[in-house]
Length: 364
Image (cartoon, rainbow, N blue to C red; front, side, top):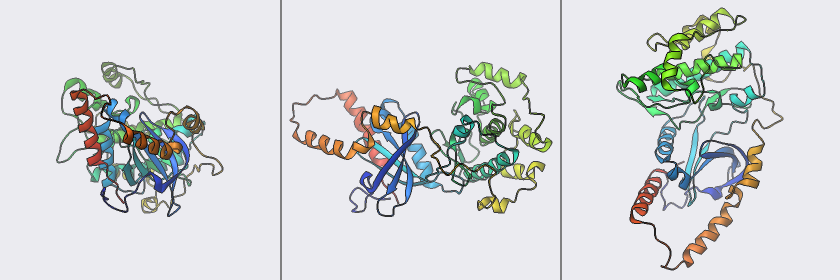
């Protein structure tokens, strides 16, 4: 970790902004190049004030604290973090192959071989996370990014949680169409909670969707928890007759409603007849050639992100340096007559900003 007094503290000026490539519920992502090494990364940035207003500060810290402790070949890994007056920044692996949601929207027809490798690579990622006591809770096509060769990497730990020593998670967290039945049951009944098995259910839903083009259950964000519990107990998944029996068997095991009977470990997946021809040692080293390789001649993201950043964004990133210098100059010239926050507001904002300052230190 760096400290605020260090001469080598990393900051925004150490990176050149190349272009915007995406955005989430409160964060945006752009491609950057580190000026000294010329290495390229993805940089996720979040406005501090928006984080405070949306009560997202704890989630940001949880994601940061988790990312600082993990590294794996099939994850999107964190390299640096820092902040300025406006934003918090996370600099991570740059993966230019696009996410699986993008490719689904482009009507890519994924083969069984392609999906088998995604299951394999995501199983290796989930197995690693389990050794670190981490439940991701948001495995879905949107959060699986491809590199230029087509290998899959899991990203976005915004709703991840850590459970140790037989603990159980209880929060209603994730994206509804990918959330396991026990998450809803636990929420309704206040019962036994859930654990690592939920990520393997999400992997099953994701694999089904990538291969079929739609999800195994018709679930939307507006569905009530009660209706979903009813759905899982009454609706049977319809598998495509053209799929191989072994693949359908693996899907059934991943999409088993009872978590005690669900495939929920890498040993389960490796033992599946469908995966018998996978060279797992080669897979761990990215030596298995993906069946789907993204087109190298294009950037696999929505071009409107770049237009929005340049035209619609009120505080565009490429004008940050000039804007902050102007703000500092203005702040220095303010007199003591400036409007004060109420004591309650000042206390709240001060405590949250101190929390941000304490937790988000640069690291190398």
